Length: 193
Image 1 (cartoon, rainbow, N blue to C red):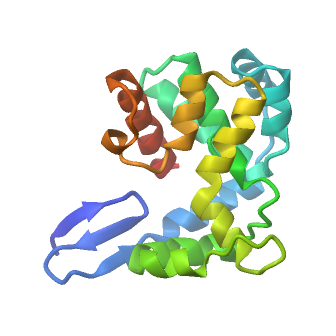
Image 2 (cartoon, one colour; image 1 turned 90 degrees about the vertical axis):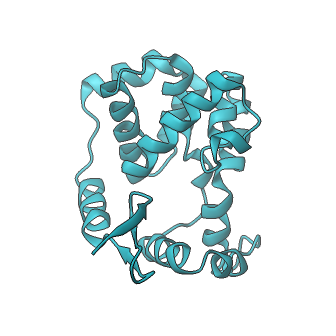
């Protein structure tokens, strides 16, 4: 069984063209999120990188998104990244999911449909806050909304750009080479957590 490529959550089998999902990974991610509680040291880390308005934005995120943000930050730190703008982007990259009413089943459907038929997911998403389809819209566009929210809190413009483009190929982002390198690191850490 040869594999053509991997996006972290999905494996593409080259010889058959099949898509293989990693449900164990998502189950582990879900169980980890259920048991999340912020350690005192994480509160210190949070306040080291974020100002008061940014901390407030972070704290308004769901517990699972906060846990994910810390996991992304810790991964970047383990890889030797210490740029403050990258830390801000890691902590706030999913802030755009606020008030999106995203439930577990939305996440599951998004992962499955994105892996099998991305165009269908774009058709399913609807920018109508009262619709059951709105959470899919939020998931697809949370990067733009998150960048806007982060900018309003005084987040560094480079961090805002990283948030805006964190689901885009670095070479398509329009960022300078340093920004592209930071974006690639953020995307990798995000996909692995």
